[in-house]
Image (tube, rainbow, N blue to C red):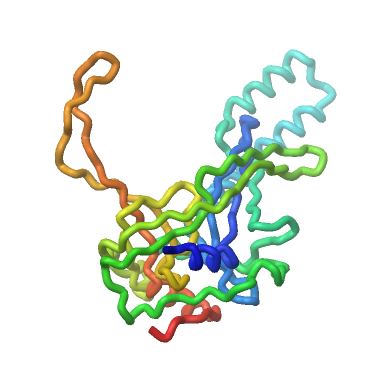
Length: 292
């Protein structure tokens, strides 16, 4: 049903991999998706994809201050080894192991940077511009579904992203950068359009925030990817999954003990195309929209 539309969506949907190194030395990765909108290189993805970048920016002054203190201690030749060890332990004891010391956002291709990022947290939408914009990263221009024509519940839709990835990053001190290896497979998942969820207005009262709810959950790695119909028209940008209680708790035996297990339904939420268009218009970014 969605084979042709999925093939089309793969021509403008790419993975976004955010890698972080922490003060404690661990390296972690998170995978999402983004849609290339036009030949100027503008993309749309989720705002929450940049949460780790924001944390790294907030951690930077603390990391720099502590690093400077450690460097100064090591440069003090008058200090005995025992005292140096004590002072180093005191300084490092004040560090948060989860401080982010390094962060990198990889956008589908080596050598491509993301510039001019604009974030609308209330709508979970972020815009950015690929620099440079490789011509072969947009072999089909995405078409946004007209926001006032026939957007009704009951339609079967499909989302595309990069679920079930096997990605691992390491940090190379020699080049002061990350090395990422692994598999990032495309993964489509269908669901019925169940409801429109109205989240009101952004704090500045300029954008009407709505979400399209689907009967299947969005999977980790699909955030930022498109929600599209059988013609490949984009109805929304996958944001998150909500877990709604079903109101019954069947009894189950777990580890030899009987217990009640609450039941939930997992539903996907994609940012409504109308909200996406409002954000694009406010930013002056070009896009294509269907006639109906």
